[in-house]
Image (cartoon, rainbow, N blue to C red; front, side, top):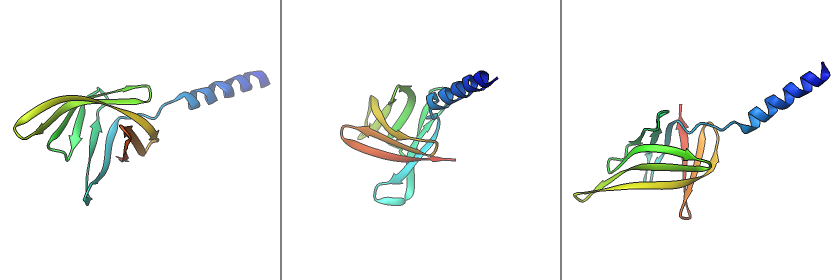
Length: 113
């Protein structure tokens, strides 16, 4: 009986340690220079993505590749549309906080519940 309980505890611990926090949801940050407004990304379970309060940046899709977040979409401005795919390193993440790093820069987001 003791061996069975020990084995079950080990399995549960391994499952808990190996589980990843989901990226799905709405992630927001203050708009630079307008801290009373928010902008961000909506990551849908089916891989679709949407921009939140960013009319010139339209996200279409997202995927997670290990500790990387890959976003694709269109940048719209000055009469032209540029298709893009960007990769971010997931620096920190829990159920309510996300930090992405790219090219030495960092962006911090809070999950909207």
